Image: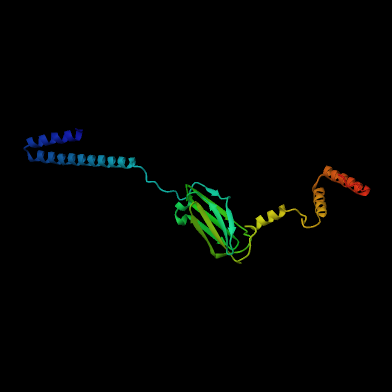
Length: 226
């Protein structure tokens, strides 16, 4: 029993024994005061208990607005029909995310794909400088099992795309030999040697010069053996 409750019990006992009005009024006022204090103490305890219970509750799990990080997509495949260039991107579980999490934006010569919150990550793919113009209105996307299919509508139908982008075309063309394979093979070989000579260092140039002189001397003697 708390000290306030003890005081209250004692005041009650005194109040029962008191006979004079002034004493009884004083004791009654004291009794009311103690009861009010006890009531306030009880309310404070209840409030603290409720607060403690609230603090013990697990915090509500709020989904993060942004995901951990964005992964750049570099692996894809593509093919074409008379009307469309089709790009295939494999992403495990992409068919399970909400439709609005898969976004594709098209321009006449580019597209960018963003897949948000797939297994805690975002995935993006940006392709600029498409080989030829596409129709923005006619282009679209499809989400299939573990795959995003991007459909770029060709602005000019029935035209063949040898490459997906202009950059890819330029890179491939640089890799081609500088001579024409349909010309005389010996002329093609000469062009190759010429290119090696121009790009080579002094040792390489001396080696080619020596081989060239020896070859000419053999030809002059009618010796065709090498």
